[in-house]
Image (cartoon, rainbow, N blue to C red):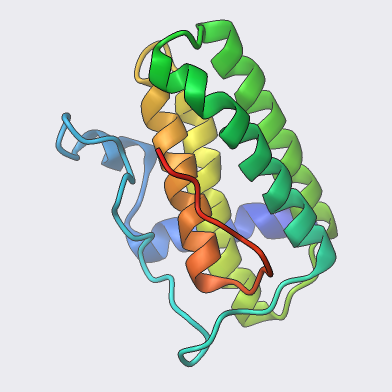
Length: 160
């Protein structure tokens, strides 16, 4: 997928869902943005999981691995701003590889990009001056959505 295609999808999904960066601020301040809230419009493939390809599975496993390694220190409160910035950089690198190499059918691709947008928003929050743990929660939530909507043998949701 080209970068312009990905950016077009972001704009399309944003317009379709009414989501925006400022829209997150309107949520209950006691609840992390996107945490336990479904990504607007994501659905199954006529009741079945969407098919994946090797590039997508590899990239999502890398994101899940990085989050799994970070969560104990995030929960313990020992994750620093530097750690969050490094984690965000890793997540963005994985997202870039996924968007360059993943080749799904158009309907599956649209569903996937809704999840990738949530992961990207979580990565944005990881770099914020405060509330970085909310960014981690957003990414964990998106990974859970991925597992509930896409075929990925052996996928297990992270606990947090």
